[in-house]
Image 1 (cartoon, rainbow, N blue to C red):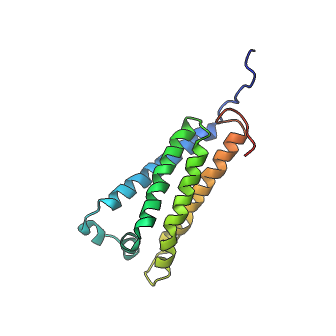
Image 2: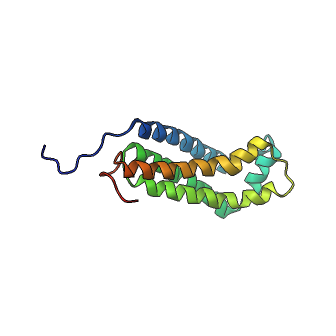
Image 3: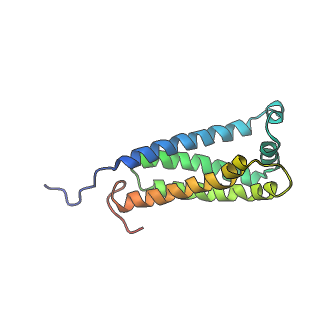
Length: 153
């Protein structure tokens, strides 16, 4: 064989995680676009917690929300293309999630009624998914499933 470094076969989990991540982030992109173009009538049909998050969110947090979902979507595509660059987009998306959540903590503690499902979704699930994607992508790079082979990251 004339190849100096052979890349390992891509593990099935890269396709599963990449596909699910792309679906998750495309739904996030759709949510962002829906919120950005939402009519006042659509807003009144939402729960008080959802209304508070949308109307009380400052512009910088909305920008971070956009960075989180669009950065994550790009990271997902790059993961499916088996590119190391996906890690940087997932890191950017995770930072976007954390920054966009800062005002949500204040809203949750402001007296607006949040159900337990809303608390889990808004405060726990999204950052956990983001952290998992960073962890998984680092694992995939170390094991040589994506990129040009194993790396020390």
